[in-house]
Image 1 (cartoon, rainbow, N blue to C red):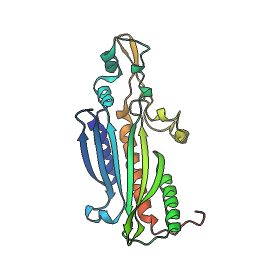
Image 2 (cartoon, helix red, strand yellow):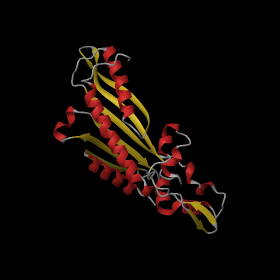
Image 3 (cartoon, helix red, strand yellow):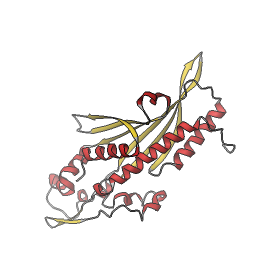
Image 4 (cartoon, rainbow, N blue to C red):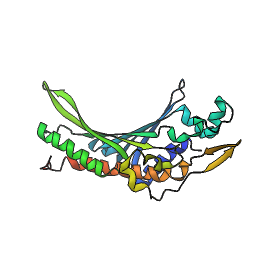
Length: 244
């Protein structure tokens, strides 16, 4: 079964392979037993990082994820009661996906931008970021401002994205297809079929194997991050689109 350490390891390995510079951090809530991973990513050297866009990626690994990673669906079921073929504990397709929160920032460094140009820039940024993001479910641009000379001045362009990864779904990434029509192109992808029916105590359990496809998904996520970072760095040098 998949563990928290393996998930973070897959991401860090993919980031290194794609050329991202990463600064990972790890936390654990000793009361809820939730574990959190956060990482700041950028392209190029750390000395020049403040001059360019960066991305902060984070996810939370809950106590249910830990239980599934250690004992599997049958182990969680046995904790509450005896074997029951109709028990919902054995159907991991209903477990919420692992959510990666991506937060991009691009400092403006005092660049003077009119309100109309700023709005066009944000719309263009959203369009470019969406084009380069194969895994995200939503893209939300924004801007943070600071008070300067008694007026609000744009300070940082921001972009929020989410990536949902159904690590416990028996069908893997195909498990998103029912609710996400935009992912239909992946139904014939190269990811291996991970569905495996296992008999445990007379109860049929569908055992997911995310370790078969998660490394490739993390590669895709890291490549998308690089493309969005490059699009953000280029955004300030692009003229506003006439249709925006």
